[in-house]
Image 1 (tube, rainbow, N blue to C red):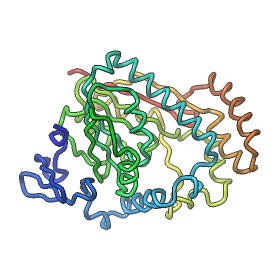
Image 2: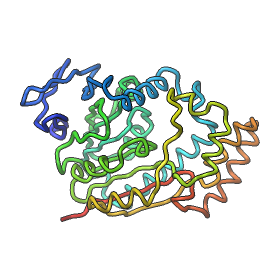
Image 3: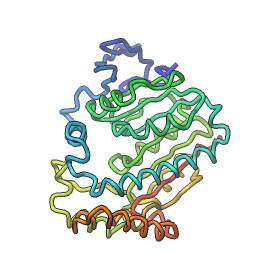
Length: 314
């Protein structure tokens, strides 16, 4: 059932997967690496994808903490937990019968692997899960961390550009991504998501807001912050909430939830590194900033924002 959701990225024909390779009905063949389908064998011909692969291979090899990608692990963990609460709220509100649902879920940028753990914890009745990432090494980490997924979960990891449509129409119930959308071609991604979602299907994501000028300043003031993980030093990618809404509306996706997160705490992470605050001060600062964050939730001006879209029933 799971592979019936996926199509050949070249001709969009049916794919049959073996232990070492997969092939579509028209003869297009792709390698399977440790159970991961490789839809981008010619990645060296695409400079942008090759750079993304280098970035996340580096993260997989060294880890977020060693690279220093996260300015403050304590605050980042707390912020992640806040995002999870929002994701859970959306799913429970939009699908009140979520525990009884048989779902097909696609996660874009699945290599970080925390989202998979969160989705498993929600207790869906049955799940076909398809994770997409450009880094095989990140997906190998995800598979290693959650090799023993629940018996009611089928999983398949695919090395592919998330800009490419590899799904049958009306095949997905949920598309989920965290901190990834800004690194992609927004128009292309929203278009294939709209086609792939079933009627009433959900698209849920969180990403950094482009108007958060103080966070941009903080990242700039930390010496070599971006070069720690990005050899091209392109800087952290951000996105405008209204830009996503515009694209989504054109593709028959209806906004059902929107909230800005971490107006103060997002910025606070960079201050803790710039001034090398001890942990007791960091903890105190986080809880104080959280009081302010509770009252300021503008998607545009917050550090990050979460949006959820439901596909129109035509």
